[in-house]
Amino acid sequence: MSKIYINTDGGSRGNPGSAAIGVAFFDESGKIFHEHKECIGTATNNEAEYNAIITALRILLESSWLKANLNTDSEVVCRLDSQLVVEQLCGRYKIKTDHIRVLASKVFLLKEKIGVKISFIHVRREQNKDADRLVNQALDEQSANS
Image (cartoon, rainbow, N blue to C red; front, side, top):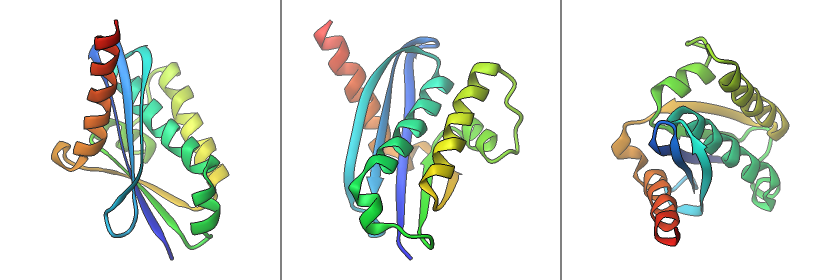
């Protein structure tokens, strides 16, 4: 069985405000093998968190790495520092707004398409430094280019 870890983060400067996402893919040994950062326009922190997960799963679905390294016994562990989003995706917290429900539906659809076990776990902010760094890099680069 192969296992990969995906750390995701989303943030906005202002809530809502200029928002970005960061995604870091790790192999079983803890080595980063792919990173992604992107500004996503104006969003709330929660919207950015969901967009980070959606983007991570899309990257995974579209990658040749997935086909070469994952099989039905494989596992993908998504690590987020947003406890709210983790609890919502695990069904322990109710999603109260329609636009967040739409984003969660996209996560579930991608999860189904990927076809391997995917779990969502909450990690402390200190354990999500790589994804957080990518969010801030994207926002800093946007500010520098404005």
